[in-house]
Image 1 (cartoon, one colour):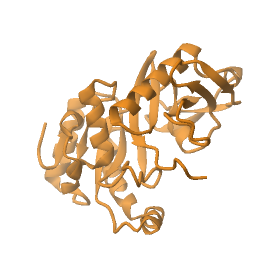
Image 2: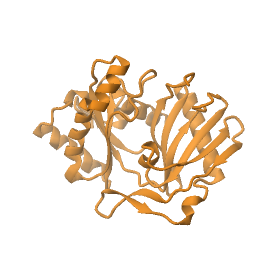
Image 3: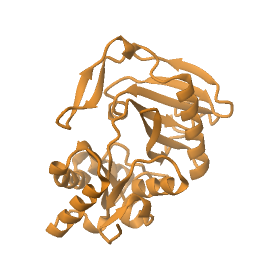
Image 4: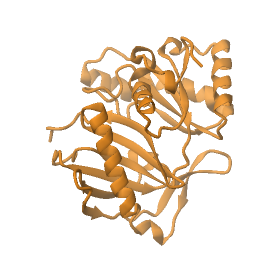
Length: 272
């Protein structure tokens, strides 16, 4: 599938049309990293939900043959080396065919939110065009983020991994306190472990909404095995080498397999 309006992620190689996030996913797919399948609605369609575009989007969704999808922004200047737009635009999880079109429109509208406008003003950015990624929803058993450089100390020899049980949005949005693991980048040796007390997790309900579910005493235990910590350290280091700059990644584990949901530059190094 390829048109001026929609691109499979495997074909999303024109950053000016698909935005920074989709372009990064395309690069990782072409390199062979494990990225969930999906497509991107290009900036040519920004805020223009025509009947023909509706048909294109629904046909592309049907082609994915998945139960539900995540709908994410991909602004032209998003996930850049200077401005990431992290957390400024909306993400919608566990979307079904019936609410997909509305989720796309709501994602567009979030570019004009007070939060996004405030960020643009702080960065002296004159607006942004937004493409929208529609991607297979990974019902992660464990998820989180990882940094190829320690984000507080700026130690370039350490990878920092944050992990929780359930969907990763809980970690990214700060709604739970994750485990934190610090790993030596070269040897893979685990230097420190800080375990959290997690009493709830974000999951998909039977009707494909996203809900909180209480968890028992296992929420107090180490969220990742030592082997998974070392595997994530290696993956994060490999992505840093591939992109050529320090990265902040979102990851998910489902049925023992690690998926890369996003990779963006770390733009805060050297700042207190």
